[in-house]
Amino acid sequence: MLDWLEYRNELLGRIGDLGQLSPGTLAGYQTLSGAGAKTGHLDAKTRELIALAVAVTTRCDGCITVHAGEAVKHGASEGEIAEALGVAVALNAGAALVYSARALDAVKAHEGSK
Image (cartoon, rainbow, N blue to C red; front, side, top):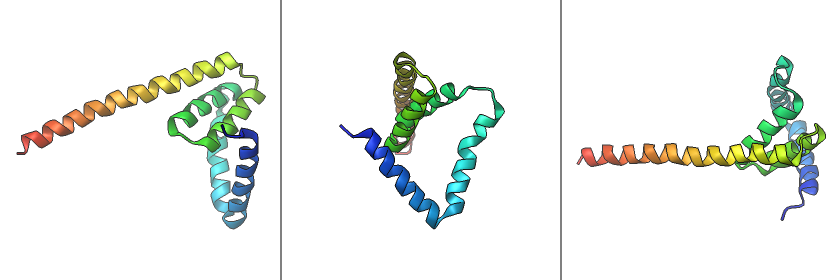
């Protein structure tokens, strides 16, 4: 398994390197990332649980390690994290069902064009 803490530190260093080369890119990301928190509708723990679930659905290891750490920092319990991850699993399966229906629709369209 991955050493998540070491990976996070290495990743943040590389992102810092990118920020040196392209400060506007990093600043834009930081603006986008912080925008949701400004509304105050969700607390930090809830936002991090959502971010962690989304990180799983997008298969982003960097996002997983950052948001796992932030979720723990904001008091998310293992049970809350497991429930959020359960939502991610359900959405991935649901997306596969939806895209399976789309694939069948595409097959029917191709069969009709023979």
